[in-house]
Length: 272
Image (tube, rainbow, N blue to C red; front, side):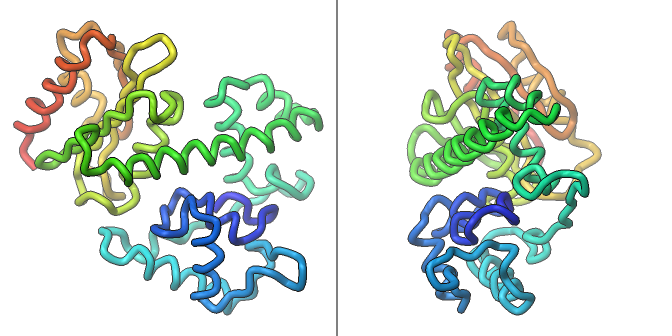
């Protein structure tokens, strides 16, 4: 969870995207109520408590609460746990925790501000402060993207076929984070293990940027997502990149209908 050392625990939960917590992620009041339901005090007097301030018993309650909120999905309880790495020579803050640091740098790139990320790595304090502001914008965009997905799951923008799903977000999700959103959805336990998820967004040039992922945590050695996306875009004069576990493509907006039809044919005929 981003903000382990720096953010109030209810804000950490509100902006938590991996794992996505129904009724909590993207909802500040929902996050506060969730803590109350877990028997965890969000404040110590007038001061909001950080995730790092919780004692062992409270951490156990929090983990249990998150697992219970995610019941009904295909995830395993241990999927909400992971290691924490810290950099000894970094000062306290978002560059102390390796995951927070990596996410901070990623946000700079995806929001078109790579120089701020480079400046942060080189130790420029002004760049570091700007990067901390950018990470908040980045996380909000991801939460908004996930909320859009959940709100539109039954609309024509999302097609759920046999063993595959097409998320056609258009301009509703920024093209630079469409792959991030698709990746989170693939790990959220929403779809059965092995479901192919293709998420699509329109970029500033008016073309379609797509990202392909597979749901679940198990690695299927026989599945190559780059090859699959290459088959889908065959004949569309598209650019395809990536590797067997994650890939993306760039397709002309004029080929949108043909692209969607190809996905349905290629993935629809795939044995699942």
